[in-house]
Length: 114
Image (cartoon, one colour):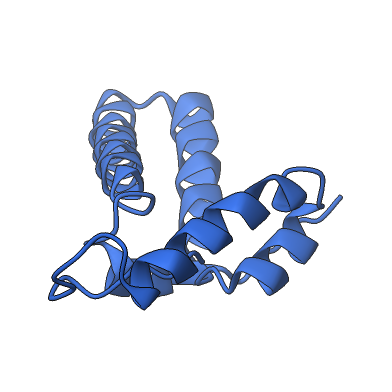
């Protein structure tokens, strides 16, 4: 992950700012890496560790993704009970499998690489 200069840096030309500018110049070399190489070389957090860096601008959009995923999970949960209530077992089974897959992917127990 790109390290930012401390917020207490008084001048934009400080040493911390120079480090940040140098890291920005190195950023294009990450673009051609595979996901695993990128995660290793950029020191990006994995799993739910991204929450510890939520204050950074490049991590903050993940909060929206997490909220959307949660809404999807809740909608599937409501659908599951509606299908069970109406006796539609096939759709209830499909929704159950989808809920299981969402939980497995969120828990980081199943990891798919390419």
